[in-house]
Amino acid sequence: EKKESAANVAEITAYECQRPTLLKHHNPHITEALELLEKYYQFLDHKQGDTRALAFRQASCTIKALPKRVTRVEEVRNLHRIGKHSISVIEDIVLHGTSEEVEDIRQSDWFKCMELFTSVYGCGPATADKWYKKGFRTIDEIKTSETLELRELQKLGLLYYEDLSKSIPRDEVEVIIEIIKKEVSECCPETQVEAVGGYRRGKSHSHDVDLLLTHKDSSITATLLESVVSHLKAKDMIIHASVYVGQNTLSRVSETHDSSAQPTYTSEGQQIKRVQFDHLDKAFCIMKLTRSHDKTPLIRRVDLIVTPPDQYPFSLVSWTGSKQFNRSLRRYSVKECSKTVTAHGIFDIIERKFSTAKTERDIFDILKLNYLEPWERNC
Ligand code: DTP
Image (cartoon, rainbow, N blue to C red; front, side):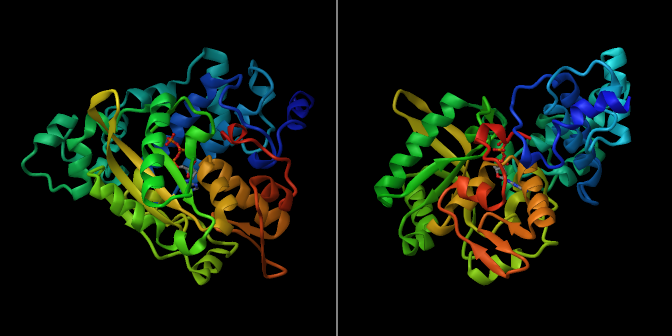
């Protein structure tokens, strides 16, 4: 058994950021089950943090890196970061084609409702659970309830539910990028606009469009977000924007360079939990986008993030993700290089100084990692 997994161990590095993870791999039937468990524990443990959920994400990442389809559980038993619970799920799938535990969760009323309700913009696991406990089971019941008190964002999430819950295909993301680029170049010429997130990693569909903006002149980036948001508002393109500005001062930046620093999550779950994950200026928007050939506007979620030019490569890595890639990069940097890495920079904990980088490759070099293309960061 030891020998059998030794062949695989050689290929599986201790940290995900040390190896390519592609969207297409040999064991999607296993990773789909593990990621359902990840989601289940995110829902269940929303008050306590992500520890149990993370264990399934990590196991899933390891499985994604395997060079072939798993046929016997012995092949994975001694691999990095696959815990006992994951092993027993994998064993069921390998032996019986399915895991009873996973299928029971998938079919359970609670899980189905949690998935449905958290697909409403502004509704995280805490609210979804509350709605479920109050007896709601469908979006229509929520929409028509006269007793539920809804937050502004949830009201909008429900009003535009059909539009906002659609996943966005790549060609539509590209149309949206072009529309925004045109507006940005009109109000702030020479601004660089880069699509990041899952789109940049090559995913066929995204939940939102993430755009990273910078300008070679840092005095312009200081007010860029406000200018762009005002311009888009004036053009009637913004239905709602949650705007976070003015947090990107150097003292805040170095505060985050603490080896124990973890991203802080608001209790409101999935869609808005990134609020504190860095101190860049950002606007999480619901936009109304009109295409040249179609009168019906697209209502879509678009996130605008602004970074100063010297922080650009770090922000690019961070906003390209995946989230798990970022987590592994942070863990690896602290443990193996005594450096902290964030969307703002790299800080050497021993020498007490920041590194500079012009490109993403420079960042991998500083951390002594082989360069990974964005589509190789899909862990
Ligand atoms: P999706 O296709 O589902 O939108 P995504 O684009 O990877 O997936 P997001 O749009 O939520 O995900 O976020 C864009 C990137 O920002 C993500 O890939 C990594 C980074 N990011 C966001 N939130 C966090 C976080 N809490 N911790 C670490 N990285 C994060």
